Image (cartoon, rainbow, N blue to C red; front, side, top):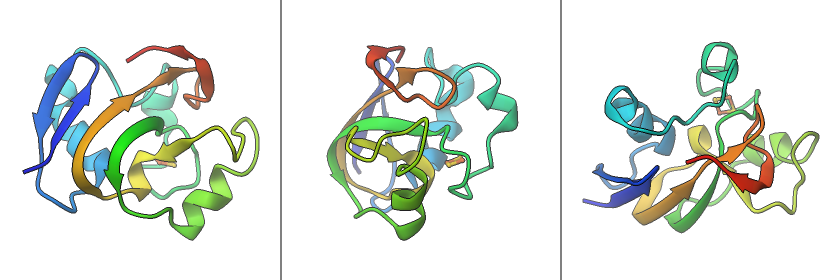
Length: 113
Ligand code: FES
């Protein structure tokens, strides 16, 4: 079972689990949150359209979906920022996940979790 490090904690999930789903299952007890501020209420529920589940990920994830490339390709995101949309990615191995600040988690120079 892959291990995911996020916000100072380590959780496990099944291989090929959706990253957003894996993090959301543990959110009530985790110190960190996948969504920043108002995005916790306004996110698109995993459709890939809002862009607020963006995270920096180190480890083995599924390739980017077309929707993910599309959403990360326009502001406030920048296509070359190296972020992934948790709702569009499947966990293929151990991961280190970092959440950056800003409503979309797009401020890659500031980490919150
Ligand atoms: S939850 Fe909206 S893009 Fe991932």
